[in-house]
Picture 1 (cartoon, protein in one colour):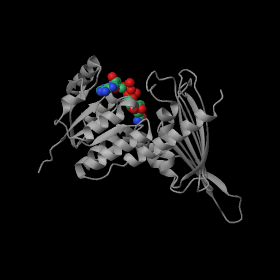
Picture 2: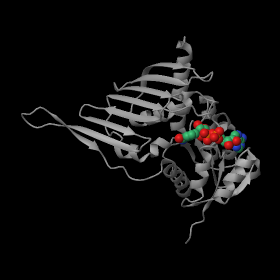
Picture 3: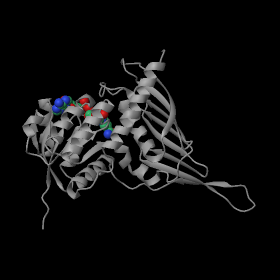
Picture 4: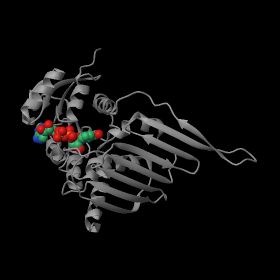
Amino acid sequence: MSEKALRAAVIGVGHLGRHHARILSSIEGARLEAVVDVNEPRAREVAAAVGARALTSVLDLAGQVDLVSIATPTETHAEIAALFLDQGVPVLVEKPLARSVAEADAIIAAASRAGVALAVGHTERFNPAVMAARPADNPGFIEVHRLGTFPERSLDIDVVFDLMIHDLDLVLSIVQSDVESFEAVGVPVLTDRFDIANARLRFSSGCVANITASRISRDRTRKIRFFQRDAYISIDTGAREAEVYRLMRTEGRRPAIEGGKIPVPEGEPLRLELQDFVDAVRFGRAPLVGGDDGRRAVALAAAITERMAACTRI
Ligand code: NAD
């Protein structure tokens, strides 16, 4: 018996949303019906490229879709997500889930009332380099650098909600313990929000994570390094490369460090993320990254930003 493809739409087809549209137009189990963007020429351009209808209002989609992917600016996520969830339509919301914990809670409550899937676009969880090398044991120390050039986009949020949130989610998913305390500092440079930030998190397991994010750097860096008693893991999420080194002990000899680059399978993180969402809807299971994960990252990002605002005298 042939399975009917789920009717999909992408809301917001700017920098990232056009990739959602490209992928959803060629993914197993779904058929891209429409793209929606308040910028009409953009909606038409992307729709023509992927063979879907172009719309300029989400209201025109009522009753016509089985799932949507939302890639509009963060300040619009809560309103647009609730609109679809209240109609019983499963939703994938780009990261960050929302700009506040209260908005994240409202989205989660709407999904729970409707009893439908809510996925959050924490794409790094689907990065093949992360999947190949993520540590199995609790790390002792984590060092993260996520630096980028000035984006001219996502300026409705600061660098913590824009970039650092990727690593907050990743670190929280790997370190299976609570954040006990943290220090944070941020500097607004080109905007009146924080453009560069550092947070040092201490977990109750004893692990310390030192996370730096910048959207005003000259070069692009995406590095996450894990230090453990007998292993060192270095992941370049941008290049999708990973190195793993382990301590080898031989009786009567000084321990030696062995290792190097490990094989990383091919795969586009966004495609893997969207396939997971479509499959969650098709097979009635939870998506890999759900509303609670999105909320947890938003809550930590909000606490970090609050602390930075209270401590920054620069
Ligand atoms: P963008 O500004 O390039 O695109 C946003 C688009 O949404 C624009 O085309 C805009 O016209 C449209 N839009 C705004 N309000 C709308 C509405 N009410 N209805 C329909 N369309 C509307 O922004 P972007 O860089 O693509 O970011 C979009 C979202 O994706 C943000 O939440 C951002 O944080 C997230 N993002 C995630 C990643 C990732 O790696 N997962 C990367 C980049 C951006």
